[in-house]
Amino acid sequence: MQKLNILVAGSTGYIGIELVKLLVKHKGVNIKYLCGNSSIGKSISSYDSSLKKKKLPKIIKFNEKLLNDVNVIFTALPNGEAQKISNKLNKHNTLIDLSADFRLKNAKTYLKYYKIKHTARKNIKKSIYALPEIKNNQIKNFKIIGCPGCYPTSILLPLVPLLKKNIISSKNIIIDSKSGYSGAGRGIHKKYKNKNLYESLSVYGIKTHRHNSEIQQELDIETGKKVEFTFTPHLSPMFRGILTTIYCNVTNKNNINTIINYLKKFYKKQMFVKISKKNSLISTNEVINTNNCLISVCESKSQKQLIILSAIDNLIKGGGGQAVQNMNLLFNFKKNMGL
Image 1: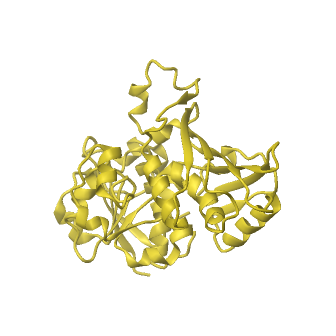
Image 2 (image 1 turned 45 degrees about the vertical axis):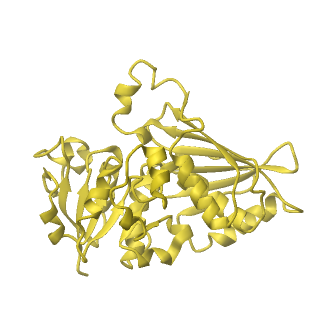
Image 3 (image 1 turned 120 degrees about the vertical axis):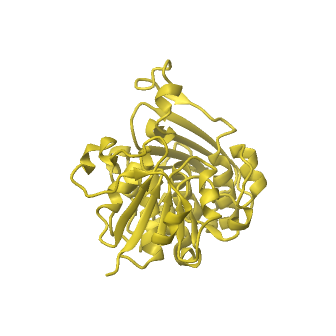
C-alpha cells in the first residue's frame, strides 16, 4: 500500500492533537508536516506526552510550497484560515477542514454567524458538508471536505433519518446540548478564568450560537422543508464529550418502537452509530475516546412526545475522528482504519 502524505495545519489545539493521535495509528498515511504559528520549532509531544515515542516532524510554519509534497491537508485552524489554503491547492491535494469554513453553503450566512467575509467563495461550490453516515459516497466527488461541528453531529445523526421519513414532526423540536469545555478550545481557560469553569454548568449562545446555521441548513436540505427547532448549548465541567437531549413530537401512529427500529435499519451498515435499547439512560462515558455516536430513544410522560438522547466525544466523532472517517471514505481505506 502506497501511503498518503499528510499535512496537519493547526496541530496543537485540542482537536489537532486528537487528529494526530489517530493518524499515527493509521497504516495508510505518513505525517509529513505538522504546522503551527505559536509553536514553531517545538515537538508535538510537548503538548501530549503520549506522542513522545512517535517519530513525528517538528512543528513548522505553513507555506504554499509544502502542498507539492502532500496528498491530504487537514486544517484544524481558526475560522477563516482554511479558506486561504483552499485558494492555493493544486490538483493533487485534498483539503479536509475541521473549522467552519466549508460547512455553510451561503457566504452571507457565514458572514452573519462568523463575522468574517468568505475569501474563497468559488470553493464553497467545490466543497461538501461531510457528515459521512448521511452523505456517504457523495463525499468521494469532492476535494474540499467540510467536517461538521461537534454539536451538529450529535443532533443531525438522530434527527435526519426520522425527519426524512416523517416519523417525527418538523415543528417545535427542542434541543438541549451539554459539552465538555475542550469544545471551546485552549482559550477557554482565560475566557472563563473567573467563572469557576471546572465546577459549574454554564449556558451560552442562546439564539446566536454559530451551529444554529449549520443545523438549520442541513435539516432543511435533507428534509426539503423548513424545520423548526430551538437549540440551547451548555458548557459543562468536564473536559470532553457531548450529551444532547432532543424533545420531539411523533406523527400519526408512530411510537418509540417504530423509531428505534427505523434508526437501527437506517444505520445498519454504519459501524460508528449505535442504537441503544428502549429507554436507555446513556452517558458520555460510553463514547469517550471512540468515534461512536450513541443514540437512545426514551418515552416521556406524554404519549405524543419522545425524548432522544445522543452522545459523542466532541474531539473524535465531533472532530478528528470524523475527519479521519471522511479520509477513509475518500481513499477507500477500511472504515475503521485508525479509528
